[in-house]
Image (cartoon, rainbow, N blue to C red; front, top):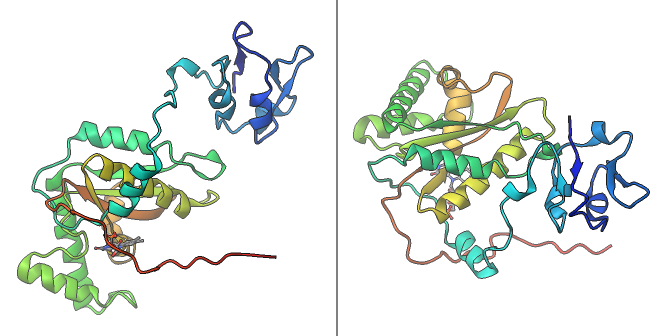
Length: 276
Ligand SMILES: Cc1cc2nc3c(=O)[nH]c(=O)nc-3n(C[C@H](O)[C@H](O)[C@H](O)COP(=O)(O)O)c2cc1C
């Protein structure tokens, strides 16, 4: 039930909500006020653009009170965003102390605002909050890598994981999870439109948000392969929903390193200007 409510005292019949509805689910009534079209209820995917765009806060949808929406009067400026994007680094040295669970919960709540295809919002963030649990994850993963290596069962292309197990065994250096005290596994229903992209976008937002809050992150492609291809039984124990595709894996925690300046990329990304 979409529940479109218009406060006629506040509505100025400007038509912005109608113009901004990607599903054309709204139309003007004879007085110019917005109403649902006949098919609107079925078409609406609850993006809430109608409520977000209303200049007077006259429109409520899906039971949301516009007064409870965050006001948009404090945008970071371009320079702040540039520093965030250029200054963010992969963190591979962490303090031996946990991030407060309420902060983790707040960060995940904020990144739940990241966009998803068709606004499906079906991501699950499976999180290791307790560093002691993360240590068990590490130990279990390296045991599985060792077992697979010894029995010649490492998946083709992942033979190098044997050297990661050797490093772990000889020095305790953790190549797969980079010593991160916390783990974040983003997954989304496999039948969705773009499960991997939804996960990677969510984690990209998480990474930048974390940086802005003094928390370090590292993308863990090696962790993804370890969990999905070498020790899926460990992944299964983590209660990631069975019908989900694991989009990516990220480590995070309080950084034990501070970067003083940005790196200088040498035109690593090429821009192809298209003319037709
Ligand atoms: C998709 C993806 C997978 C990555 N996987 C790993 C990984 O498994 N382990 C690791 O230490 N770093 C990993 N990284 C981090 C990259 O090595 C890093 O982003 C790159 O070297 C640039 O360094 P910076 O992030 O500090 O700018 C990954 C990055 C991306 C985007």
